[in-house]
Length: 150
Ligand SMILES: [Fe+2]
Ligand SMILES: [Fe+2]
Image (cartoon, rainbow, N blue to C red; front, top):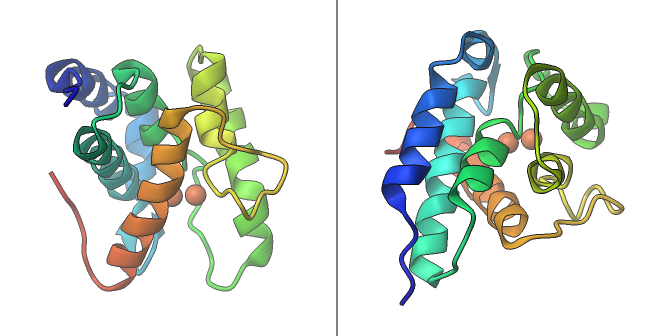
């Protein structure tokens, strides 16, 4: 079964997690008070692990960047805010584009992570599919009090 380059993935993820702009996500929370920073970290780790489990050959750089920035919206999510559900991928993408130079694949990972809720923002790569799945899995776990993986 194909094994992706874990060293490369974690090197890119680690670099992003040291970025002062990315670290701003530590100030904001979602999913039962879990900082958005750690939610994004969890989603990145879970999506990479899922790729390894499925034996999917992925682009380690795009997956690490897209997953870590998927909720880069820099505000604390209020409970029961339906607009947030539909609009935050666009806000996250706008912040990410203002801060980093992103590939088309990375942009789509961020924009489509709430699919199928965001009907027209469809995941267009294996990396984007992994992030939509890992996001739902991690949100569920975090709602049950889980904080951080990996
Ligand atoms: Fe999100
Ligand atoms: Fe998320």
